[in-house]
Image 1 (cartoon, rainbow, N blue to C red):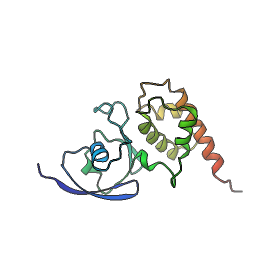
Image 2 (image 1 turned 135 degrees about the vertical axis):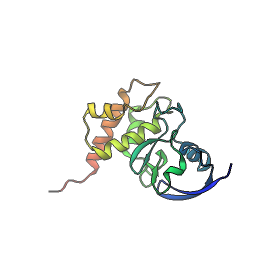
Image 3 (image 1 turned 60 degrees about the horizontal axis):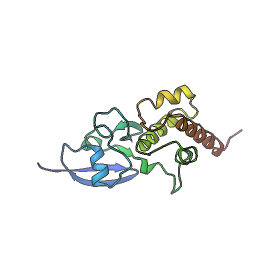
Length: 163
């Protein structure tokens, strides 16, 4: 099968790639770009482990053609850190034990990043609803919710208030 040349913008950097037209975004990220944070969990869009942001919107990379993302900004879990430091949500997940095996964590991180961009101070019900598209087979979710609340508090303390 003939490959096509595309340009993907991932985590603020452009990448020119020769790919098969049928290649999934998840495979291009993991195999061609060596960004292995996003995970293959189900291949049927039911678990959310492969979630990335495409132009700021959570998308399941296991069901998207890579070529369909040309001209859009893709953010993976590798792009969440801020200037080489852990983002508040990453630190909080570690501090509060927000993950067990860690397999689903990248997908949750991306979904939380989107949720907090839309609503910087969500209620617990809004957090639960926002994360309903992601599945974890290890935890009871309570540590995740605690981590998210801690990240929200850390973000609010970091933002200077104006009078």
